[in-house]
Amino acid sequence: MSKEKKSGIMLNATNKLKNEMGRHFLAIEQAYRDGKPTAWATAGTPVELLYAMDVQAMMPENSATISAALKQSKKFIEIAEDQGYSYDLCSYFKTSIGAVSSKAEMSVGGTRKPAFMMSSDVICDTHVRWFQIQAERLNVPHFTLDIPHVVSNTSNRQREYFKKYIKEQLWELLDFITEVTGHEYNEEKAREVASNSYELGKIWQDVFELRKNVPSPISTRDTFGGLFPLFTMPGLKSPIKLYKRMYKEAKARVDAGVGALENEEFRLMWEGIPFWYNLKFFSNLERWNAMIVYEPYVYAFSKYTNPNITKDDVLNHPVESMAELVLSFWYIYDLETRVKKFKETIKEWKIDGVLLHNNMSCRPNSCGQYDLKRSLMEELDIPSLIITSDMNDPRKLNETQVINQIESFIEILRQRKKQ
Ligand code: SF4
Image (cartoon, rainbow, N blue to C red; front, side, top):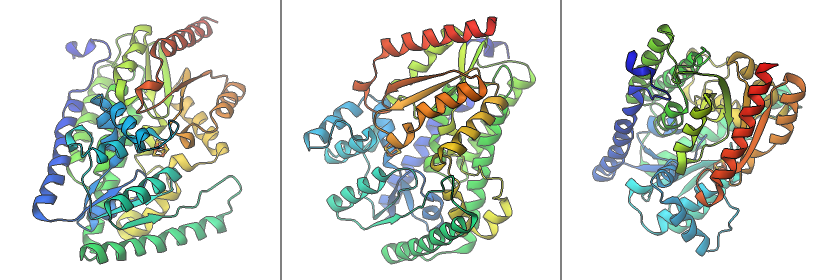
């Protein structure tokens, strides 16, 4: 453990993430070589059903984050803007448009032409429009799932109707996949995939549980990157091993009383998508002995957050349980539920302050932040700082300004601790 006392240190297991990503891209290459069908999917769709139908999934959003991490996203975004897409549109979308138009390699965020595309409006309308445009350009079939949103006055009867409506669409999706690929739905395979997906999500939640400890054994260095398999590989076995390793290592730190940060003073929550082109930015927090111990965005993709969905439901009704999962997705909560969830999380993870990313690309993600900030202060006496930037467009991050804002925010937290 002595070595681990260095500040901000990453788990060794997280370093293995690169292998997992490599495995995913190799599987895509292999699928093309073997003539196996491939599909693009947007975040929040039941990717598990693709794996259950023996279709190789590809996630252009993830590819866009790779472009950003490799400092290529600005170039792709500008290509899309040259094609007429506005400066204000989602930078994932524009990165993908630019990367695909310029036939970029997968290693820098390109995404190959799939057999078909699957999107949904569960998180945003951009997803649907994005795939409509790309499906037309690439001339491939596109299936979109229409997901109603549960709001504060949605009754149980309406919710049940929503679920039925989504279930019908999921069965239609499976018929569509059969039509495009010739692959038939196999219940046994669907159960296996659902079981793996459930296990993956639950271990991720267990990792988050460990972060309730003071000091927290892991920081965003592990969680932002660790998110990748939840998006791209839910239902596969291999990422489960990686998450188990992460858990084991983090648990050993907890048992030894060792944190990821040597002198943890301030525990923060980060709401929103990080700056993928500048993940190093988050190490700035360490100089003030501050660390992020919870990210709702990262947690949300563990999917199985609704306690009413049991492992038996998932195993016995793999398709139907997907309908419940999309309805329970964190990011479609109404403001009232969102505030309630934030308040519970702040208490359980012993959070001192909240950083809210007002993401210029992502209005659905940023909407309601001023109400959220006010509620957390008035009802919980927890301060928040709203930071305006963008997850994939480096032109929209004013690093010096944001660092100054955070420094002042930490000073406020420090003064409050002294009182
Ligand atoms: S960043 Fe926001 S707007 Fe863009 S695809 Fe994701 S959820 Fe949609």
